[in-house]
Each structure stands twice: as C-alpha cells, then as structure tokens.
Length: 252
Image (cartoon, rainbow, N blue to C red; front, side, top):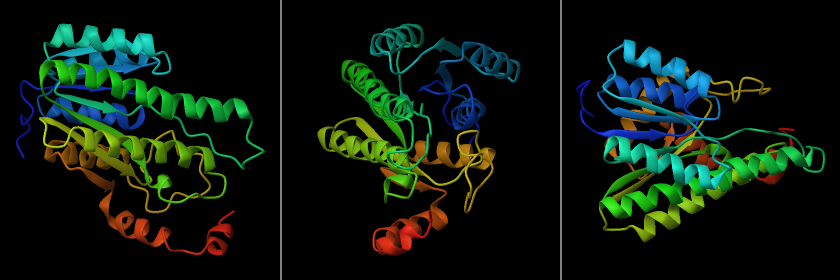
C-alpha cells in the first residue's frame, strides 16, 4: 500500500493525545492524510503536532476538546471542516476504562465512563453525521472493544459502554445503508496503551505501533466490522457467547 494512499484526504480523531489515537494520527500522517486532532490535553496535542510537522505532515489542526461537552464538540467540528474544506473520515476514539465490581466501583467513575464512552461518543457521531450529510459523503469509524461481547467480572460498566457503542453503530449502519456514508466498527483486544497497562491480565497483547497500523489498514479498506487484532479475537468472540456463566465467574 502506498504511503500516500490518503493524499488530500482529511481525518478527524478524538482522543488523539495518547495511546491508539496518537498512534493512528502518526500512521495516517505517514500515508499523506491531513489531520484534525482533538483531546482534552492541548499541550500533548501541540507536541504531537510539532512532531508530525517535523516529519512532513501536510496539514495538522489541533484543538482542545472534551467530548462530554456537546456544544464544544459541534464547535470544534465546524472549525475543523472550515479549515480543511471537508471531513472525509471521523474516528470516534476518545474513551476511558474504569473497572471494578458492581456496587464497589465509586459511582463517580461509573458516571464518568458512561459520560465519556457513551454520551461523548454519541455527541461525536452526531456532529460527524451533520457534516457528512451536508457534504454528501463520509466515513464514520467507532472504536469499540471485545469487552462488549460478554459481561466480565469487574468489567460491567466498561463492557456496557462499549456494547452501547457497537449497537449505536449498527443502527447508524442501517440508517445510511446504500448511501455514500460508510460506517466501521473496530472491536479492540488488548493493545499496549496507558488505558490497559494496569490490568491484571492482558492476553494476546500487541504493541501500540502494530495496533495503530492494523486499525488504519482496516479503516482504509472501509470494513464494516472487525476485531483488532483479528486473531485470536474473532474466534474468542464466538466462544465468549457460549461459555457458561460459571466459567466466566472463575475469572474474578
């Protein structure tokens, strides 16, 4: 695949200051895309902007954005489109990963997870769809998780938030069927990022550089759904649906 496969195209990424958001920005830049990068940490975005421009990025717009502030989401999308002329791809990536047993996890963390991973995600998609419908095309990418496939001990709120992401995107895919708007759902296994480095176990974990490349490859192919990495998570997803609850309970 040519390193300039995305020449002239634009991509808008939320949660781009660290982890997979940052790595996707680097990978998209290598392939010639123009970038609109957002996150709560403007200083980290500006450092990334300088790094990308030093390495030859064609255009990098950065903006502070908390996706739980829907008015700010709409404003930043409008600014990015005005500057870039169009928004070809939007990657709704911003998310957090609080884990804990139901009834023991402080409810402030439950609320924060839902506000960011569900409400903030939906605000991002709503804003993206407004611009896609105005310009007549677009590609919406949502970052979900294999945690959405089955409720796991201590993973209730995170898994539920990602199940909401997956279901919401299925509705959007049906609503935009046969239109010039494409929808991609990427369900992630363990990729080495700050989000999961505190986990007790990270089976089949892969480096963030590999994860970023796999994600951008799939986005460029405009797949509808995929696990990342595909192996072994595509098989694990099938198994998780049929494993007895007693077996899942032993994973506490």
